[in-house]
Structure formats: structure tokens, C-alpha cells
Amino acid sequence: MEVILLKDVDRLGKAGATVKVKDGFARNLLIPGGSAVLANAANLKRLEQAKQNKIAKLEASKKEAEELKEKLSAISLTLPVLTKDEDEKLYGGITTIDVARALKEEGFNIDKNAVLLEEPIKSLGIYEIAIKLHPEVEAKVKTWVVKK
Image (cartoon, rainbow, N blue to C red; front, side, top):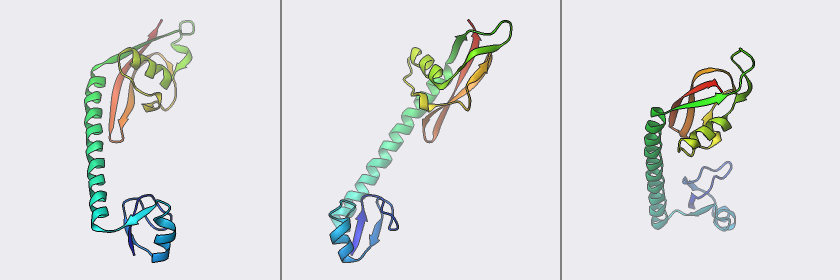
């Protein structure tokens, strides 16, 4: 019997795949468990439509991310911080939370997990901070860390 998998099934296939299984396995486990449906014309058409919808949503979100990337590339953040004596070392460090907060003040609602910092910034200077907006889109924001 051929079925279309609705969920990933171990040692059988990924969601959306059409696989051939034994009748009892399909009738007793896969179909009642909601992991699969029969591979008939109506279900194949529904699967194809769902794939098209998913592709359209991904394209729309990528386009939004590209537009946001252009806006983010045009701005520069200034982060005033306290420093030790005449050194250029900071008391703390600039973290992803600080960058997200500064972006929010500029009018961009960016999650702290989207800010890509390998380690906190510990000295004054100019930095290019990467922000992951979409799996395929990454923006760079120029950030100035200055004395308060």
C-alpha cells in the first residue's frame, strides 16, 4: 500500500514522502496515528498544494528579510559604555541583549537570538555585528562602542 507521510517516521522517510508499506502497518499504525494518509489522487493534490503554499511563504519571508536587511545596513548604532580609567577596556561587555535593546530603540524589533556575537565586546571601537534575519539572509550593522 502506498501512503504519504505527514510526519517524519524513523527508518521510513520524511514528511511529504510517498512510500510503499505493508497494508497492516499502514492501517494499524500510520494512518490512525496521523503519521500518514493514503496515496490517492486527492491526497497527492493536497500535498502538492501544501508544498506550493510553503514555498510561497518562504519566498515572502525572504523578501521581507531582504527589505529589513537594506534598512539595517543603512543605520549605525552608538553604544555609550563606562570604561576603566584611561584604558579602552569596558567594565562589563556588550552582549547580544545590549545590541537587541539598541536596535529596539532605533525602531527594529530584533530578537536577541538573531544577533550573532561570538563573544561579548570588551573594548571601545567600531564593530560590524551580524544579524540573522532569515536562514538565507544576514545583515551587518555598524556599531560604535564609545565612552560615556
